[in-house]
Image (cartoon, rainbow, N blue to C red; front, side, top):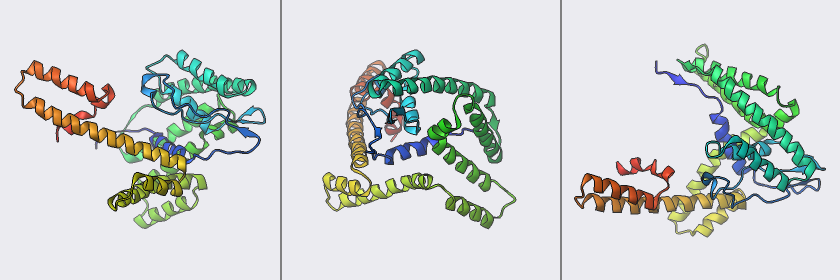
Length: 316
């Protein structure tokens, strides 16, 4: 049987992205405050240029609010690993904490950051020890559950139960649900009808926030189908924006509009590149000249990272 490499967390990462996408409404309760708006101009490293910082920093009655948003903010900067040293990343995060939080809450956040970095290092070491090749889907489900439990045990060394629930509770619930569904799917002792019944029970018992997050991808698909239908009928992009804003929120509609613009820009650059590439191929250049001209053409239209995607289009 083909060897499978197991990894727990991909599903959680994907759904967390959707959850963060839809969770855009800011609270305006008097005892909570987001002290500054997210940076849209931040360029801590080149790969972050044009991005917006993930997560929010909040206080409640002068105390730090520990939640998944805080962890997302930490992870946003930690994504720069490889471009910056861990010491540089930590210094940058602490600078942002000082800018956005009052001194007491900033100190609490820095202390939590220190423990979070220790946890991430320990988790990396733990995963190396647990790393293994699995030969079947049944073994994969067992390995995933073992990794999940090891992760829970490790967190107890760095976070209180309240902190762990606040930062990881949603992802944990999603992971457990995914593991349970995989175990049901691969249970050969169950009939097809029994499997469907157990899956329905899982659906019925999903927490409201998890159910909403699982439905979010479907809502995105439906919105895009509706947007394309409107465009085919002659609707403007303003019409599409208003439809999306009414269905979700103005902030989410803005982000979808930005995705549309980026996709249109990408398609335009690809088309210009392919046209010019065909012209170069027809000139009868030497192999060295052609190679040099092709690279100059790629550099003109695409970043180094984007160029990794070009072979798919060049083969068409």
